[in-house]
Image (cartoon, rainbow, N blue to C red; front, side, top):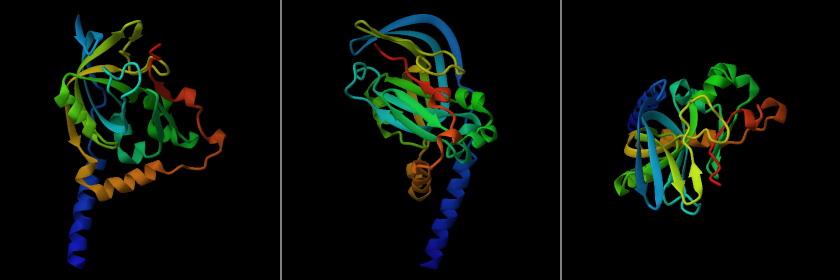
Length: 231
């Protein structure tokens, strides 16, 4: 029994070490293209940039009932660069709902994470439009703390009289700061389900509500990346 426990501990430690030191690229790649128009599920897309991002998921949400859920089926809250390391993103409290990603950070943690500008420019709430059912099926499997690679196009979306414009900058925040991606390829490069012991521990730590005073947090409006309101 002690031998078995030792093996589990060693495997768990090695996997945790690999995940903690897995580096996502510092920046996504984005290449401007001649705009292309595409119709999908009653919506019109205008593809504007070839886009690829590799990032860690801090929150994943599937939408089924809002006005654009027939085309923008999933939102992922993602981080990349040094923020994607477990020791860093676990310092931040994340909340995702209604097409928004909001995060809160104790004031004294901000310098250690590279400053608020760095955090803002390496955090995003991305709206995802799957190319087909196989892409959608993979997106359904994405969980918090997975590392994913997504390739496709940044696109504006029009449905009837509603329009959502994609962000084409990593430094914006607030309404309109979300990247809208038409997804042609998606890979789960590192999955927390490979090691439920390690990731459940991380999930529990991240989900704990810390009792800071309001003065110890930067205000949500200053450290929020949120979606364009589709109205």
